[in-house]
Amino acid sequence: MLRPLTLTCCLLAAPALAETSELAIAQDRYEAGQTVLYDGPPVQDLFLAGNRVAVAGPVGGSAHLAGRRVEVDAAVAGDLFAAGYSVTVTAPVEGDASVMAYEVTLGPVTGNLRAAGNEVTVDDVGGYALVTAEDVTLLGEIFGDAVMVADDIRFGPGARVTGSLTIYAADPTDITVPENVAPAARVRIETRASYDRGEWAGGMPIQVPLWRIVGGFMAAVLVSGLIAAMVMAVAPKAVQGWRELALAHPGRAIWSGFLVTSALAGSGFVLMLTIVGMVLLPVMLILTAVAIFAGYALGSYVLGVGLWLAAGRAMPAGLPGKFGLACVGAFLAGLAWLVPVAGWFFVLALTMMGIGVLAASVLPGGWLLRRETVVA
Image (cartoon, one colour):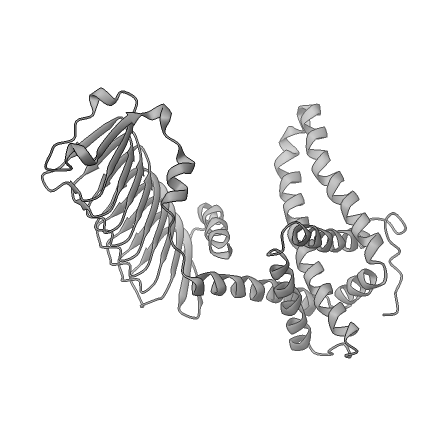
């Protein structure tokens, strides 16, 4: 979850950057800008976003790319995730490929392929292929099953489908599959209206390694802890007051957070009724999202501190100890998501508590919670 969020944030910020912004974390590399060219040094996972994005150096892991025009001219050892107006891949992808663009041109893919666009050109695919487009051109061999949702399909001289071939078209009579591509016994052509996306999405999952899921979860925990640590470094007294207030009045803080969140979300509807205020609707939506994120981060930190104090331990005096408690809280909050229903309500209450405490420090005294110093 962290990686798609990071990629989205970079993409939204890219048009405003005159120069490329770069960030390296361990062996992963993040770049965003108007024109982004990666040609080394070697990295594990690569995250690029911009107007024009090009990969000219080999990637040891997965590549996450977003831009108006995306070009991949060097091998990707892991999975490829790319989105834009035009995506051109000339180098091999050793893992799976998930691509979405108006124009898609692909090179060899060792794993599975999922592609969506208006014009899609497919080369060799080692696994299955699920392609949705207006026009599809198959130049290579698909060694697994293939599902194509398109109105115009062209087959090159080297086109082959080893597994079954299922085609959904507006007019099935317009589609002809040569025998050298796939024998009639393995070909099924149906109307586009009968295409059930859920059927094939469930039957053709892209496998995500367990270590990548665990790594992404731990990275999210560290990011949450770092955010809390940065705020504590800038405003230690304020964070201390928030923490003490939340621990002293958790129920009132949750109720206050519910009221504030309802007011923020409901204000969007009211602004729409005024017509003139509709221009402020995006601002209110962004403010609501920021409040939810900040409330979750603060609530996770309070959770870690509360459990630490409940165990009879003294509050750490230094920033590293408080950072550790923030990470513990974020870790436990993340695990709570695994519990059906109850986990959702627990995390919701945690977030509302954080929002309520933050609102108490902004709104006039006495509106929600008393802001006087509380002895923990």
